[in-house]
Length: 161
Picture (cartoon, rainbow, N blue to C red):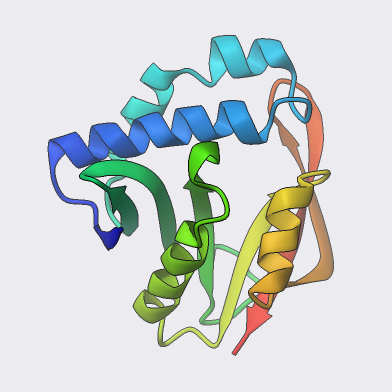
């Protein structure tokens, strides 16, 4: 398994596939099926991957992208000089192999100057919440409403180093 910066067109396409497939796997039962099938399409994920390739790490197994993480500066006005984990996804067939953990460690290294790192997690996403808590994130009480085929709540989690 290798963690690296996303660079080639094939890697961008692989990241887009993982993004799409991981949403189908992780959010089944949490988001409306119609939204997952008709709105959050592979084409949409490809468009996003090609438009925003920066600050993306990928996990490769046998040359195939099986996970990714996107990171950058926090957009939260109440968090000064903070980083943000925008997304981290691993294909379900690779759960339990510490790929998410290794991606997360690589993101931490990329954001070495950020004392505080934030992320948003969808309410009810127990697997993700357990992972984030295991690596040191804690809820800080801030929430927001997002529209993902229906109104849903996201909770902010913070890691302070």
